[in-house]
Amino acid sequence: MTDMPLTVKRSIELLGLVLLVAILVVGNNIIMPVIMAFFISIVVLPIYRFLIRRKLPEAVAIILPILLLVILIGLIVWFFSSQIGILVDDFPQIKNNVNIHLKSLSNWISNISHISTTEQLKFITEKSDDLLGMAGKAASGAAVTLSSVFVFVGLLPIYIYLMLFYKDILLRFIFMWFKPEHHPKVKEAIFETEVIIKSYLVGLLIQVSYMTILLGGILFFVGIKHALLIGVIFAILNLIPYVGALVGNIIGVLLTLTSSTELWPVLTVLIVIAIVQFLDNNILMPRIVGSKVKINALFAILGVIIGGSIAGVSGMFLSLPVIAVLKVIFDRTVMFKQWGVLLGDERPAKSPMSFASFRKKKTITVKAGTEK
Image (cartoon, rainbow, N blue to C red; front, top):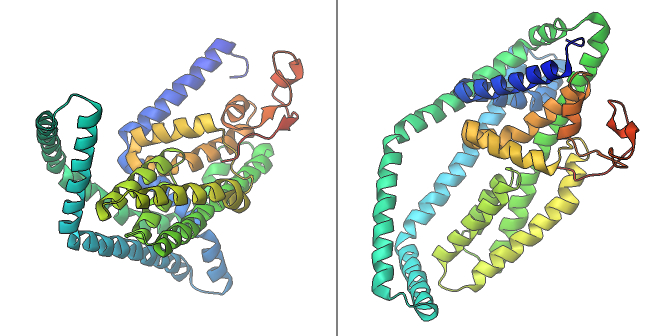
């Protein structure tokens, strides 16, 4: 392939990219659980190795970490179910608060415009009918969606067990793709991929924990209702780069509006979220993840959007670790090194337009970009 014309090589690369995306779109229900299981198996790999060193049988050393994972997921499900129960019990009060906010909003609109209360009510009625129609269509596919979620969750423990059990076969398969003289680079890439995935996913788990404690604790002491629920929802949504924080703010405001008739709790929630997020982005998270995952903001956002369009929420969560793994692979291949440069945030110290040395596929002097 090195002797091919440049246009042919670039065409093959783009064709491969299109085929990869097409495969992910068509087979996302099969591929996404496998990718998720791969990442989780790497996270639990240290526990597995620790148990093996303690002379436990291999099957037991694999099953115990999976059981811990199942218990953790069960606790999360229990927490959300209990919080939803509290919201259901408060439904009459929530309905009354919503009516008060809608009345205040209607009066404000009437004061700043010529739209009467009758016209506003007509508009709300029409849009409510549209929403009910959309809800009916969504409900028709709810059974299929729910069954696919159960299949996804049910397959994860099986995939994790088999990946840990057959990890040596998978590693041998990877090495057999390359010539023996390239095996040191392959081994280095495998080790670095493991470190990146572990540091990133474990860092996210720590991030969810301290953001829940910080945000939920501060809101609780301030006197905000559903403080812990707001903290957990925001902490989990914040795992989705850039987009999740915005959605988390909106949900936090809506939950606060439904539990209070005043505006000061909403401002309090927004201010506390802003402070906690500032601490997370500038102090805590950089020290936890460090400089292991270095993806520029442009492709981080594109990755989240593309991942969401391909596989929904799971694709958005997995977008950054997948891009990080691809960057490790691209950086170690001469043929695709330019793709690694494109994904990273290692900016040249000087413009490639003026200095020819910064146009070549070799190690160059760089200056720090934005770590994420």
